[in-house]
Image (cartoon, rainbow, N blue to C red; front, top):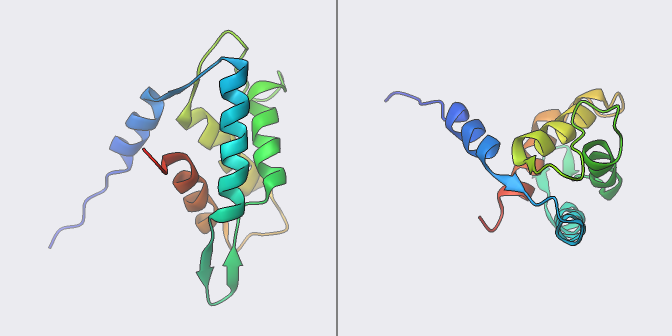
Length: 117
C-alpha cells in the first residue's frame, strides 16, 4: 500500500478560493470563525486543544487591518483562504507558550475553514 500526499492539491484549492472583500461578508466570516473556534476541539491524552477566539481576532487584524503584516490584504482585494490560514499558522508557530500542540491547532484552523464546504 502506497501513501499519497495530497497537500499540494489542498494548497492549490485554498489558493483559488477567495473570501469576499465586502465589509458585511467579512464580518459574517469573522463571526463564523469565532463561533467555530468555540466549537471545534481535538482531545488527546494531554486534554482538549482549541483555538482561542482572541487568536481569530488577531488573525483577522493581521489580514485586514495591519498593513505591516505579511498577510495584509487591502479593502479592494479579495483574500485567499490560504493567506488567511497562513496568518493563523504564523500566530500558532510564534506562540512560545504552547509549543506542543502546534500541529493540532493548525489542523483545527484548517477544519474551521473547510467546514460546510
